[in-house]
Length: 404
Image (cartoon, rainbow, N blue to C red):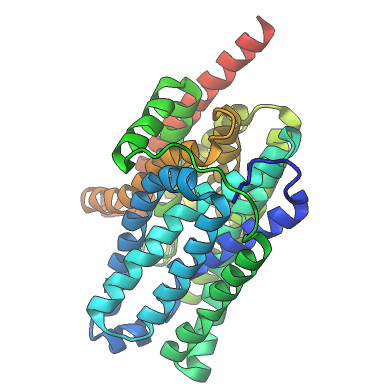
């Protein structure tokens, strides 16, 4: 199955497909979080252990991202997308058994699919996308992440109350399975010429060499690591900060947390559009770093502001800090060698998964020292500042090259 021809599918159809896969991927990865108290009873564990389950998913995601390049070369992007969706379906069915060791296997399968889907989707999307629209197109696709989180948060508790969480997860598996079947029907006859077979290790090392030999790709990989670490820390601890440091009621804090997620979806599309207009993704990543750093450093002073300004600052922070992903991925696609978008994306996104795994745990360690969530947020502003400065240096270098 071949995905490199720009005439394979209209851009809109491909964008809808890849965005839908992203929404499903995020909703499946977060499936237990909104129903943690009920699910934990079924598994016979405490509810907070769901946090470890999400970490397990992202750990497997890093492995999936590392394997993606080799699998894409051997089987093509649409086959990997189908496998990804089947992994999600299998994971949901296995979680529904409420058996602990099977739940661990399910989480690993879901994580593997999560790591595979971005490189596969990126290869499909880049093949159909004109360069002038690349940033906004990738950003629309990445808006599927907060949309998937909102979908899981709103639908799963209601379905659990109506039908039980196990039945809900088992029936939900029909969605990725049905999309996998449709993809297979639509693309089963498409030609694919596999590349010469190399071992996973050799391919992984080759992808990493591509990333490390290209300064733009290296900067994008490291920016992805620090921005994702800060972004996941914000998502994980912002409600706790509002309740414990600022004295907000839980319901109000949770509502603002939801608004922050929604503003992140709007931010992704807006920053992508702006990157295309500016013609420099690195300049936009630098601006995101500057605004995010300012917002994080302002959090210890939040209580000094009127309530409407407090909410405005938090929503603006979500808008900026969650907006980097699509822009960064479109830049990775731009600097990838022709026909190797998926492989390079897999190699680069390994660092984003590392940031996701390290960010919240590093935040928790810092909190042990500061004993305040808002002060800890100000400390992790060093991450966004570093990412912003690296992006700014890269933007200036690219501008100098363009002028020269």
